[in-house]
Amino acid sequence: MIASLCPAALTPARFARRAANPDKKITNARRALVRPVRSTSRVVTPRAAMCPNPNLGDMSKLPGDPSVVVHTNIAMGDKKLAFMKAASKSVADCLSKPEAFVVIAVLDEQDMIWGGEETPCAIITVNSLGGINYANNTKLSGELTALMSEFDVAPDRMYTNFWDIGFRENCGYNGVTFAEGARQAAAASQDDDDDDDEEEDVVEEEEEEEEEEEEEEIVEDSDSDSDSDSDELSEEDLAKIEAEAAAEAEAEAETAKKAKEEAKAKAKADEEERIRREQEEEEAAEEMMALPANAMDGKKKKKEKVGGGGGRGGRRGVRRG
Image 1: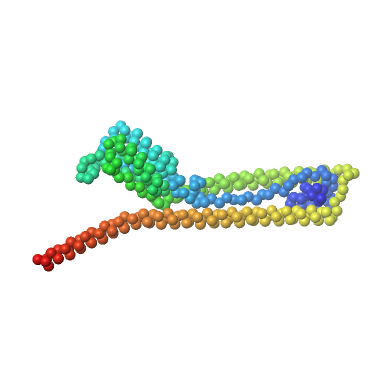
Image 2: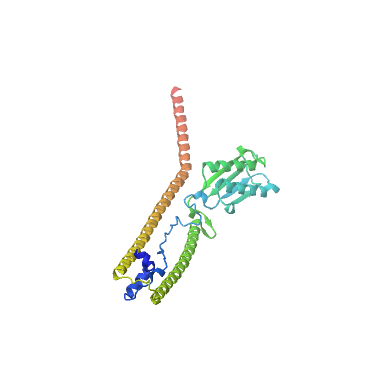
């Protein structure tokens, strides 16, 4: 009932003016316009890892050094450029990388032999910042093998080695590493967001000022109107209006506080997820680096075992003699 009498008086601005001028009377309440209280609270969405690409957690979706280097003893001639373009598209498709970041290098007519013979052969090295896995490697190996077969290089006369660069700071680009480049892009994006927030704040302030001016005009018109149907609000009604305005202001502050806490919790969860993924990638890289060493240790132990057996056989032969 009170709100229908004077809804304009429910806004915090109206409450402040009435508190400053308690003797000012509000009349002709029927002409007051209904304006709901507009919440100015905003939920800020946290940015995971601060990178311009939205797929921040999937390293294979991020651009970064998809490069292919081909060494071969054949002469590609006029077909070399066509091969390089086809290989570039294959790398971008198989590794899910933008072709704008793909580099292809071909060194043909190299001094190479395979199995001691001067047969057509090739060695291909693929480097990438993520995207190196069983499915991608198998697909890309097949496509590169098919491209080399057009130059009479048999599938069993070429190797394709895949190397995952690992961390973004291990790859330099544009005068910095990909890690630093991501931070610069994130900082620029944050600056743009700050500018947008400032513009929104200015617009909101202007809208609030316009609303306050309109409310003041309504009150002035109401005070000057001598309509016989106008009723003067009692002190009890004013007290209720002030209480309602204070309650709404408190509820708005609580909503803004809750939104800020939720945003902070989400940012913390995203940061923990990023750290967990980095740890998993580091462990995977360490396991890959340990594979060659483990293989060499196994070969060494096998060789020692074979050598030791031969020595025992020789001693047995001497004893029998």
